[in-house]
Length: 258
Image (cartoon, one colour):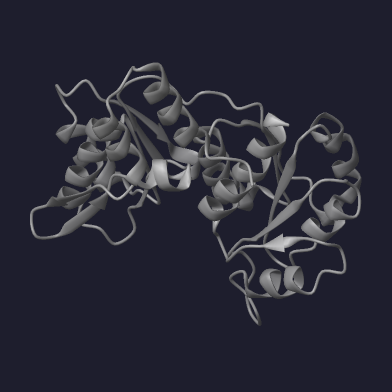
């Protein structure tokens, strides 16, 4: 098992005498919690414990509550990623972040907000390829892309290369072949991940997207198709861009360090 790089860094700093034993223990334990009012208990130790940044799902959250959560994470950890944001929530967070020194990046295509106070993520050498079958799948692909980038990966994309015009796929793959892992997003019948897995020698993660209508619509046919793939692929839930991006980054980061 490859040691968690965050833990290695803490131990190295302690060994050099840069931090005290108490400080090292606090960072390593990864169990630091903080409470915001009576509505949130936030996990400040996830990066140490799991080696991945904090990601907050905005869906269903009160804009004022979400703003408080996001600002606290950004101030304490330096970065916070928020997925599935809507304009009302973005406006609330931006207002709350005024005069804090926190920089906000709104990635509208993926409905993701990144709050930053400090340096950008350090590149790991991991490379993730993100492919979509159609343009309707881009919103999910962009969520995956941003998560992988926040985990230190270089991300290369090829959009709208699906099975309805399969000849588009082959030239698109040329600049992706050095990636350590492929994320393939597809709705409708969800064919593309199995096709890609039959052409590349790297892990492929299929992401069913909630497009399609009628019987088995809204991503259900795509999910069923990917689960029945005769090519070897891993499959995440419908529209689960975050899960795909984080899982792909973990794979790619292992390859980047080898």
